[in-house]
Image (cartoon, rainbow, N blue to C red):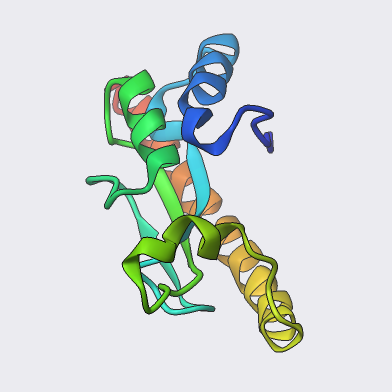
Length: 133
């Protein structure tokens, strides 16, 4: 299932927690795709657990789930030169040149999501067989 929270990004945990509860799944069965200012525009990285690095949506999810044990696809958007401009920077539309790159990044992110979901399914299936739920 793919879900896009209708909450503000900073309250994403509310939607994720509701979904996890409704579907009766574990946090380790959740994959979150999010922007990351600590990565250059276009860079994609995978993460399986850890801190939020200041990303308030991830912080909200971690707080609501009570764990950082969920999968993440981090999509780099770059960082503004002036740290005081972060809010405006992340809310500003991409330039035409950035939009072309973004289209390629979205395709790569989809591939990463598919690969990660396959790996998650494999891990979860192995865990079920071992009786480690």
